[in-house]
Length: 360
Image (cartoon, rainbow, N blue to C red; front, side, top):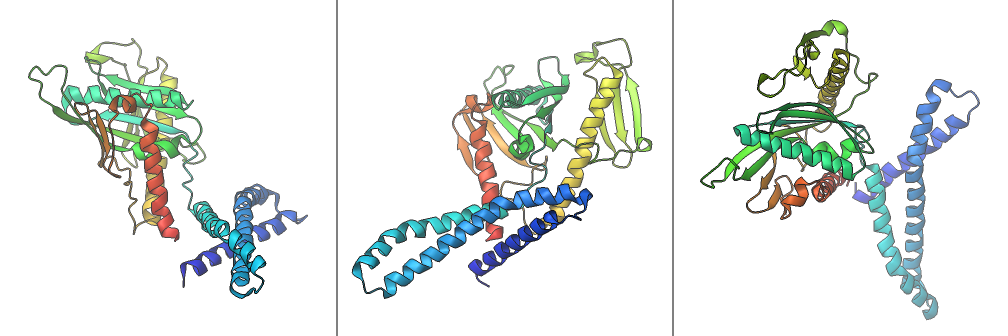
């Protein structure tokens, strides 16, 4: 089967499905409980059906012009056809490409808000300082994009670094733009505490989890062990005198979430459950993705937290994303959030290209 025939078959199925949905929605006895779902599917398919109609019209016009050029004896008519041909030859593949993009499988989590978790990795205090740089990079990036950035928890070191920090990020397509940030971020720089000027290498891990609603993930209270304790700051300094900090252990999976940012035990518990729900949802999502794409690993990587994805080399002023071989010599603008879009756009384009190769 040729690529063109394969694509035509897919487009025919889309047009048929759209027509079936239109008929189902027009029926007076339509099931009201299914109406919303059918209506959304119909609405989602409509732009694609319109693009298919546009493509088929252009293909028909192109075929007509080629017939005229091949068989028309009138030189004036043939000349007009030859003049119109280049524009249509350009338009048909452009429409095909647009439709192929519409056919790409959607990640249902793309439109969701996200939970960001940054943890210091190997490298001691320097790793903790780098973790704080990354966390603030995402905080500034969120501000640039007009997203809400709510700090959930920060565990500081005595020197201004972060052992770990988390935030809830709310806005348009947050997870779509941040999902490829998950992984190991490596830094190469001369620590302020280093007298000899030697470059040290350390790392921090980033996890970006799609925020889950209660309807997505049902958590049974009997599956939870909830411990409360007194919050403490850097070096064991007491933050408050009540047992407001909360540690939730999800017994079936062993996942543990600690929340101590709020003075209220109730608020800490609510935030901890929010993070736990996001982690459980991400586990399910990753399992589905692995099953769906067992034979392919995305060119931009799996987003696994154990995978080294990016290096920030401060002496050379460069940031390199190892998954796509992209290097930018503007490290200050990247860590300030200003140039992060350049990396994210390239990652999204690479992911789209990999998915397009599957459709074609």
